[in-house]
Amino acid sequence: MKGDESKPIWIVVTLLLALVVGITMYQLLAKTNAQKTFDDWLGDISAGQVSIKLTNFCKTWRDAGFSEATVNQNKLAEATVAAAHPSLTTRYFTADEFEVGERLSPCDCAVYLYTLGEMSLLDMQTFYNPRNCHDMTNDLAEGIVR
Image 1 (cartoon, rainbow, N blue to C red):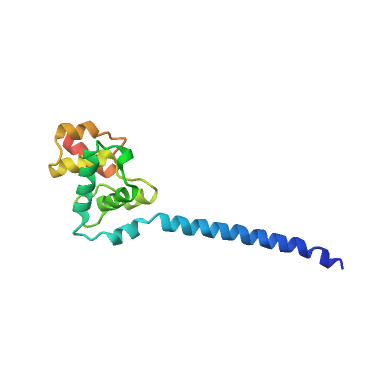
Image 2 (image 1 turned 45 degrees about the vertical axis):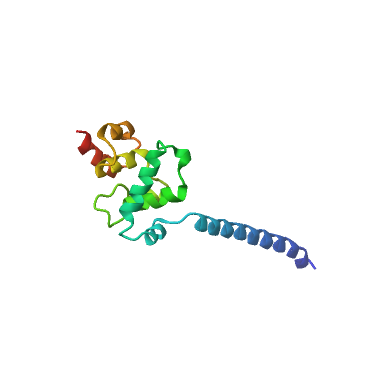
C-alpha cells in the first residue's frame, strides 16, 4: 500500500512535463513557420530576380521617404537576402547578419541606389551614416564619399 501513495505524484509530474514539452514544441513550430531562414528566402529568389527585387524595394522605400512605418517586413527580408545573394556582383549584406535579425537599412538602400545612378550623391549622403549601414555597404560607401 505504501507504493500506491506515490503514484499520483508521478502521474502529475509526468503530465506537467508533457505539457511543458508540448508548449515548447508548439512555440518552435510557430516560430519556424513565421520566420523564414536565409536559405529559405534564398531558394525563393532566382539569380535573375536579385537586382530587380532589390532595386524595386529600395526605390519604393526611397519614394516613401525611407519611413520604417511603410516597410512590409516580408519584402524587407526578401530584399535583404537579395542584397546578400551570391549572384550579386557587389554584395551589401551577409547571411550571418540576416540570421541574427539584421535587415537592410535606409543607408544600405541609399548607397545601393547611388551605385545604380538612381540617387544623387547629395541625396545618398543625406541618408549615409556609418553606424546605420552594414559593413559591406560601409566599405563601398567610404570609397564613394572620399
